[in-house]
Amino acid sequence: MASTRRILCQLPISMPFETFKPYYDLLQRDYDLVKRPDTETQIRDVPTGLSKPDLFSYFGLSLAQDREILKSMLRAEQEGFDAIAGACVFDGAIRAAGNLMNIPVVGPGETSMYLAKMMGEHFAIITSDPSFTFKIEHHMEQLGMRPFAIGCRPVRSLSLEPERFLGCCLGTDYSPVIEDFNQIARGCIQDGADVLIAGCGLMSPMFTVSNVRDIDGVPIIDPMLVSLKVAEMLVDFRAAGIPIISSKGLFMKATKGDIEEGCKALGLI
Image (cartoon, rainbow, N blue to C red; front, side):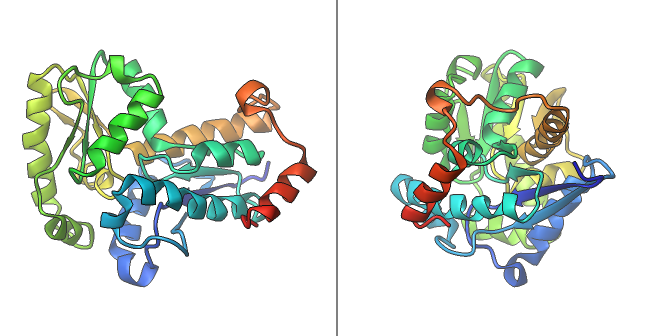
């Protein structure tokens, strides 16, 4: 392993840097708070596919977008990255990419739920848009994490208008998002949540850089930081010769030749 860990931080949709520079800067500030001095992070969007978050909220279109995310991720290993840290709690293409490459591929949604179970008894997820709640709860069920969330509405959403939320993402005043989150969070806490997950990569860095880390002793997990730190750990494991993913059963590893042939046939490379 090189002295510097290079980790690709993969955004889920097309977000041109020129338009979304304030968000790129926000996310980088977030990473800089916890990343190791010898870790280099590069934030990358998906150059093709969906560019509007409201389209990403549709289940079918979101699943179709996974193909575009996968195409972007598959370039990472050839470009010399040591790992991929996903930057969306939907965890799009994470499983496929992890099975097709040798480097670690980490999903922020999955790892944050596992961490929440370690930190407390029952967690709740608060996302940025009501349309995201169904997919996140479906993801929770698939991971077998539903028993560890609160019983009533384990995934909830901000009530902030989408235009105002996006304005906060691209501005410097995060207080409308923080205040709305606090209100929703207190309802979750009343319903038994002892850990909160900020369930949107556009939103969670706002809390961390603003030093909003808990509400009345209930910790707020920032999934962007969890995926980055787990990626760093798995890079260390791989460098030490420790396996980072199963290669049998469901995750049976194809040969390099079969992977290349299959990806070419599918138009992924």
